[in-house]
Image (tube, rainbow, N blue to C red; front, side, top):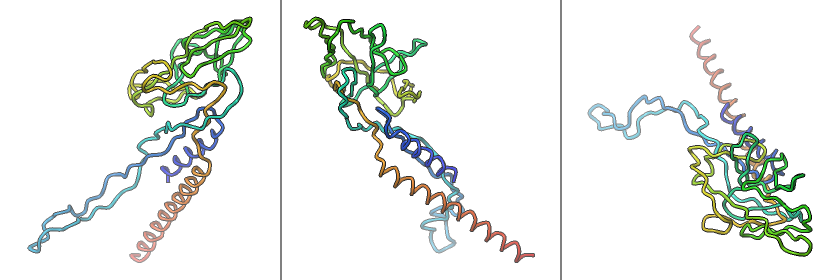
Length: 249
């Protein structure tokens, strides 16, 4: 019952973030617990040969992991110059206030008072890019090249880099659409968008969450039924033991 409750919590979190930019859903992975082995398979059965299957009684289930699924979400056009979506593998790098690096799939960047591209929380995109004050338009190529139009002339601003990991599921979630590398994820590898192993950048678009509401609702119903069935199993076992005790009395 505890394991199914965790399953419900994960599904609820997925549904809650169905409109979160760049969100990657999680699923619950379970393992069976140790077995009470009454008879070992292959045990000698007197002079009649060996027991072909043995007797093994399971003792339950436990949560083994909550892997995050980094399947791509659908890309939605927004029309905003600094909205960026990654089509393929890769992350944007963001610098936190303490100077450490974090990574995100959410490309809803904005221009702050000093002209820098920042997240909605004000964290700088890394490497930093400053848009000129007189910029009339900002163009970002699929390869990450950023060009601003100033006085009808094109001015190169810089290049956006993407970062990839050997094991995306090993990243730890920080909230605010941010992830941090861990020993399980491996170190980040930087590269230009469109190079082997990295996706490309789509301007004026955002990647939506990879949550399918219908699938999550079906999983929620399944988890609820499993919880109820486990509850009935415990109640039934309790009633049977009570009856056995009353017979002995």
